[in-house]
Length: 323
Ligand SMILES: Nc1nc2c(ncn2[C@@H]2O[C@H](COP(=O)(O)OP(=O)(O)OP(=O)(O)O)[C@@H](O)[C@H]2O)c(=O)[nH]1
Image (cartoon, rainbow, N blue to C red; front, top):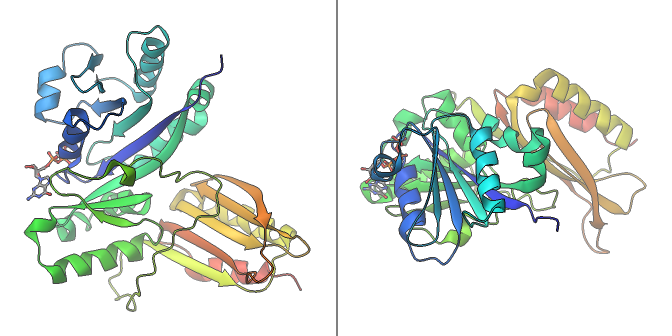
């Protein structure tokens, strides 16, 4: 019998952002879900010290039915061991959450699910969730890796909201939105969050949901962040050949700097909407439903990247318009 792929959530966030607090909530609360959690060896929470043994991969079923998997070794191996134990009935779970270390770039973890064939078949990357520590965000976001964690996310969870005032919180939300226009921002209080905010995010699906933040942004200051979002719109239909030439060139030259990108496009002579989404150099596209009769045929794309070549992207996109 074919297996349904297991949805995977990648949990990221800088040192001390509250990842373990959130995982403890997942592993202890009576939410009725069977979630397997992969924790890495660097975390120093109570859960880790209780469960980490000398084994490179330790798997334990907890009281609430969740499975905790601690790894010293590589992620791929842990993912395969979980499948093996699931298949032979030793453990049961229908979702997986992976905690990245505080200093890790979530992109390679996400890429694991696009590369290996067995992993691609059995797991499906649902979303990347990044926790941001409201009390220390100014310091953390000086680091490019902390900005990349924000830029790569499908959802942003702000922890330690209780330690800052409303003005600080608003300024942080604006900064986060400037870095990542796609990810909705939610507050998480000491790890407690409605799990629907975390699961079934479908961040990597080829759907037409761009989820762009409606937050009005003041003009960026000169010391703007390295990672930022660029949103482009066009009411002129695009020429499919020019568009693919533009995208190929962009990915060739800047693919590694493009953390995430997504678009819903109007193509000349085509009644259907074209949707595309990508991660670094890896992207996919598909025809979506037809444009509605009264719906404006507006193409919208969002790029989130590291020192985005903004003028080049603007010019390339403008040149892709059908004559
Ligand atoms: N005031 C406050 N403290 C919090 C909140 N969430 C987490 N903390 C505290 O922040 C500290 C760090 O939380 P952790 O969950 O260990 O953070 P982490 O991201 O797992 O840390 P590393 O694994 O070291 O990267 C702990 O002392 C938590 O109790 C919150 O919403 N408010």
